[in-house]
Image (cartoon, rainbow, N blue to C red):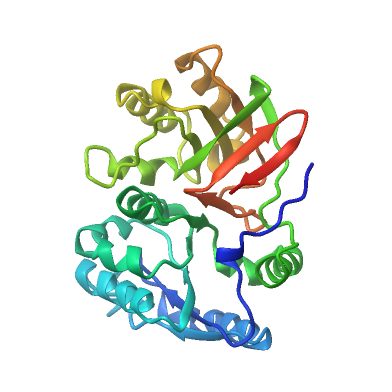
Length: 303
């Protein structure tokens, strides 16, 4: 596999400020110790973490603020030119509430990398659809998870040196032998929240990435049917499958790829990776950046 350099516009250096926020479900207050450990780690690397007022759930509920409040907190990070990157530490169900309240002109005038996973699929793709700004499908809390040591090494080398393997992942082709295009997608359930809205990404010529944490055969089947009815499979240049956590844990049959392939043209390239999804060892996938996957050449992030 070809090893890739981390894009310059995503790089960090000691002294940079980074924003920590929860645009989906607020974090439980009992996780403050974990977040403080994460803050301490970032400080050891010379970064200056800034915690958003919309980070922890309020009054025992799921919300770290209203959709409007969370959007304003995110806008504040974008408008602060000292903030060099934004990491969303949340997941859950509520990220799409932020989208109507964002000023996309502000985001376009103050571009900076935004990272989040799972439900933040809605925000990553919505922002890309409105502004063309790329972002990273990645959960920063993985730095302290069960795979923390290799995650910390890959993160530091990638963000600071540009030489780490945070973007490199193994894959195998299920159909075809190469694909190239700008990446869209993420968590399938959360992506489909955008269908029929101004935040749905144009999938024409894109590489569509799909993964899921929860759901078995009936749930995945109905979501794939919705994608088909949206015309997604006629538009994309290729499909990359990540992990389907519950299905793989419970050895569900048919498997995700077997459910997908009957929907697709026989000449549409399809690949699968075990390294991107909800696992604590998940790699980073850049939404809105061009990606080349080739059975012969390996993986390449294109400018």
